[in-house]
Amino acid sequence: MDRDGGVLPAAEVGVFPYAGTPEQDLQLGLFAAAWQEGQLPFWSLSETQAMLAGDSCRAFFAAISEHAQWHGVVLVEVTDEWSDLLYLYVSLAHRRTGTARLLLLHLLERARGELPSPTVILEVRPSNLAAWGLYQSLGFVEVGRRKAYYRNGEDALVLKHPGYEVPWVRR
Ligand SMILES: CC(C)(COP(=O)(O)OP(=O)(O)OC[C@H]1O[C@@H](n2cnc3c(N)ncnc32)[C@H](O)[C@@H]1OP(=O)(O)O)[C@@H](O)C(=O)NCCC(=O)NCCS
Image 1: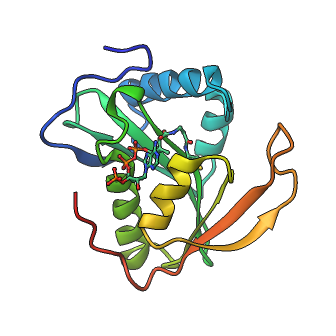
Image 2 (image 1 turned 45 degrees about the horizontal axis):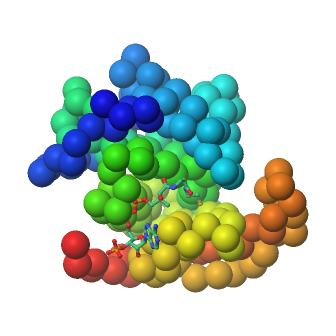
């Protein structure tokens, strides 16, 4: 296992809802710690858990199996108007293997199917080229900018996925 809890690449990756299991909470802590140690830290575990405690918050994990190590997580706040993507993290060991794309395609499918609105919105740092590339490849478009949104004073770009068309993406 690497320092943020990943394992070697697996042939089969599935998506599972957050169910508050000890394994998932442990993995959330590992993801939060790894992100906090990076150059652009984001929420701590307690901040993530506080968000998850809200009625409108849902999280999905990608994993090799329900009981195995988790590759990544996406956390969204669901309202009648849209789903707001609040948190997306993939373990270092599994970057660039399609985990984030899998999680977002799953989210977009659910938004179109069972969530109150098909629209998904999010904020991203202009300097986060990996995330920006990911969102663009899935059809997100820029709809606004929040000034000095992040702790280091960086603006946030507001992106939106209209939800009417989920792209077919070649892996
Ligand atoms: C951004 C992040 C979630 C991407 O996760 P990932 O699982 O590695 O992404 P995927 O393998 O699904 O990549 C899908 C596409 O995203 C883009 N992408 C991903 N990583 C990239 C990188 N380092 N540079 C450029 N484009 C990248 C590419 O278009 C890629 O498609 P391709 O591999 O066919 O070229 C991951 O780097 C991460 O967890 N970063 C730290 C947390 C973070 O920044 N979260 C987003 C906050 S808004």
